[in-house]
Length: 380
Image (cartoon, rainbow, N blue to C red; front, top):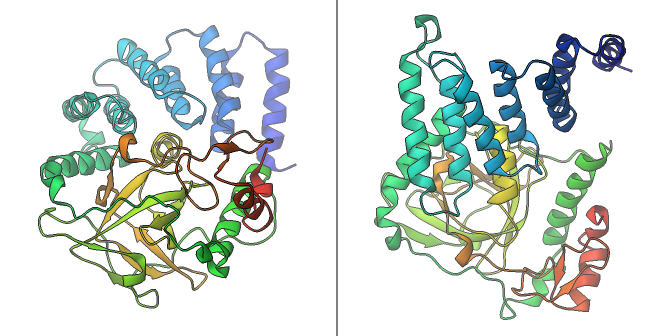
């Protein structure tokens, strides 16, 4: 038992001995949060609020933890932040950050048409609240503020989005079936799912690379969409670090990310059926988990502006994204529905009998996915 676990055990005894004291509950909740045990931390914060209702910092902590709990809906998180606003003074040091957090929630939940407007409104409220902070807290900066600012800037540039040279990267039967048994493809998918299994069970074993080495080049979003040219993975040199300025890579998400730190790690497939790893950096963990849950999902269509192809720490190629605003999401209408987890075919009607979530277009695909791609590692 390490020191933090010992501390939690001690605090648990204190809570049992002093059930009406909020101090020990609050402290244990903070430790759970630090350890990434957000469900337990949230439970302690909720219990503490029963003892000290409407405590401003507890209301903020509750909202912040809700963003980290994967099964919580975004509207519940937003409601928690709004409750914090009701009781906190405008010059409270957490008010600007809370406004930026709500703005980012609206960006992640991009289904309702007015969410972008709401995101802008809360971003502006954060700017105004920042001006009311004590001088010692100024200038008020945060990861949420930077991310939302970049996304708003991208949205304003997207008036020319129709000029993007997009293709529909839907995987269909016209793609070469031989790619399904390609050793590199098999290794990428299996390693990805092995990492998911390790994160679920906290297993030790093979070291899964989740980051690239320090980049020699800087990747960012173009100033304009006008003049961008389409590119595919096979047109990019995997042996050379290179930012493909002025190009757009259209892909679908083939595998979701098991992590958000140090980067979001996806597998993507382009119009030719070629597969590659995609590492997305500079996304705060709360937004990262929400993006994985709601946005970076199986079959989602992305366009990557100025893609950066480079070698990772394991000396294998990958696409690296440093500027999140260089990713264009095309919305649910363009996504591949019920995507086969083996070949990527849309509207796959067969479902895994065990996990009830993985779709397949045929028995052959299901068998291949189980035996070679490692679905058995994550099936539950």
